[in-house]
Image (cartoon, rainbow, N blue to C red; front, side, top):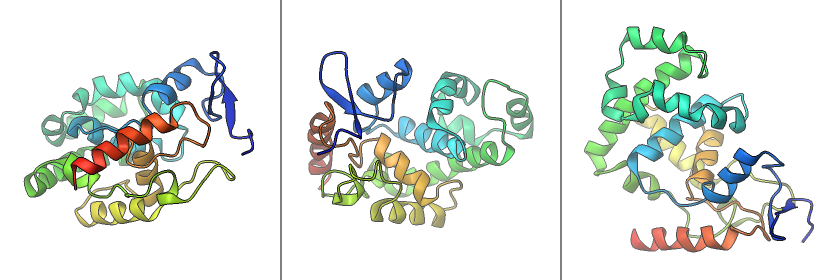
Length: 211
């Protein structure tokens, strides 16, 4: 395949091109992106941060992630669901995060909806991983290396639809697809990337356990 979508690592391997030379982004790619997550709080946090990313780059959010965690009480769903107008005003004055009223209010709303979903299904993890495709690699089985990383898939569209039906906000198909990539439900590391196979093995293990 073409090396257009790969960049060399210091160790002589290859990784996806998109982290560029940014050390924080490289660490995120190598150690987080595409590695399966089965923890309700981490899944909720990422859905919220993907919502904040809308219209921005993920690197912008990544650099502010610790600030978001502090501002939103480590994304504890019970606590965030109880945020008041006073909390909203506090967050709107916090220059260390993205100060967008709609996204802040959506996060508070989504905390309540997440708790409802946990009451309904047992866990956020079980519900979300129920939408992971069986087919490995990219766009529910379609290779993406020739056109870069995809931005949507049937499984992401289905999950987005179900979340919206339950009252979630800022969870459009593109946002949800990005979430599924990062949390390991979909493996979009390009062919030749040094962590692609590791992520897929871990993903298939999680999928198999949930059948």
